[in-house]
Length: 120
Image (tube, rainbow, N blue to C red; front, top):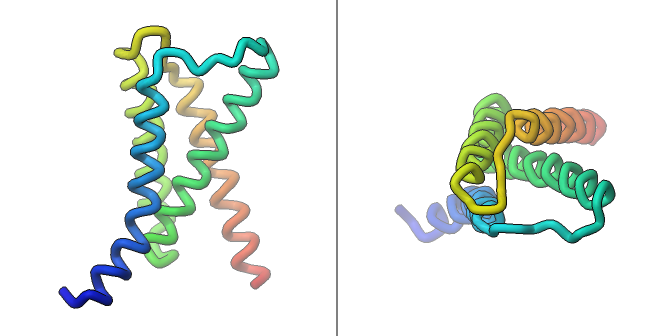
C-alpha cells in the first residue's frame, strides 16, 4: 500500500474507531452520575443519542457515503454491545431502552445528514 492510501484509510477509519474506544472507556467507569437527578438523566440520554449519531456519521463517511445501512448497523450493534458491557461494570447497568435511545440518535443523524447533503 502506498503512503497516500494508508493516510486515506487512517483519515477515514481512525475517527469512528477512536470514538468507539472512547465509548468503551467511558462505559467501563463505575459511576458517571453528576448528582443532578433528572437533569443528569436527561442530559446523559441526549448525550448518548448524540454520540451514537456522530458514530453513525463517522462510519458513513468512512464508507465514502455509500453504505448508510452498514454504518447504522455498526453504530447500533456497538450500542447493544456497550449496554451488554455495562452489565459487568460495578455501579452501571445496561438496558434495551438505552439501545433504543442510541438508535434514535442514529436515525436522527441519518435524516440530518441526508437533509444536509440534499441541500448542498
